Image (cartoon, rainbow, N blue to C red; front, side, top):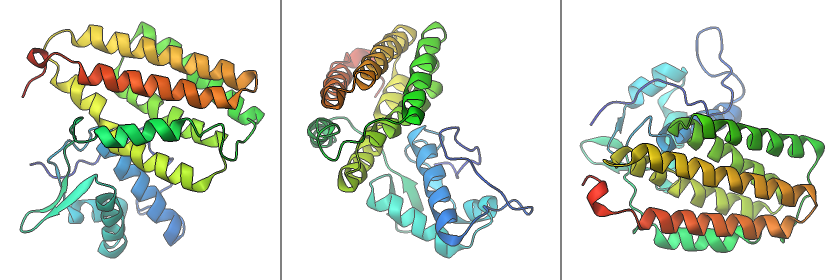
Amino acid sequence: MSDAETATSPAAPAVILRPDGGLAGGARERFQRLYHILRSRICLLDYPPGTRLSEEVLATEFGVSRTPLRRVLGRLETEGLLTSVHGVGTIVTDVDIEALTQVYQLRLELDTQIGKLSPVPPSEETLALFRDLCQRTQELIARPEPREFATINMEFFHALMRLTANEPLQAISERLYYQTSRIWLKSLSQLQVGRDDYLAREVFIFSREVADILTAIEIGDLEAVGHLRRSHVAMSFARLRSQPHNQVSD
């Protein structure tokens, strides 16, 4: 097991630092920033499964005391991303697609509610965000890169959450999304044969999803957004489960 690294995830929110290098802002704001940074690092495999997170290293890096840091780690533990092991410390959990089957099943049902429960007509800012994501996925087709793909995928999820004002739906969907978001990157990292072809195919399929959802948003059919999202998540889950075992290392 390795101690926590110090690289900041590009998917994390902007980090505002004090002159001494610590996180700026009030206590609540610092808690949220630290939480989002660590969650992104876990889900982008900056902290791979089995990594031991050192409280001392993290407290020094972010210029915070152990008390708020432990609150952040505790929240990540309740969300299934970390676990406390007596005599060892705080460890990044592993992910297994079969163990998360029921999580995927619930995600599929929640996706259909995006355009039904308290729908929010997209603002010009939201439309611009989706158009930018669409452009970035098109550019990614020419040069597929796993980390950038995963980062855009996270941003796309949060953009979708702008289309509903139902806070319970947002909260539950976010928790389930981050429970499963590492599976694809882990699967790719283990692939022994056809890695580039697999990555290129997934990027292309994702680009189609973003383009189709953008079209649905532009014509004002938010219910279609939810059904499109459900279909793509279902197909992604099926593709992950169907990977030949002889192409994936144990």
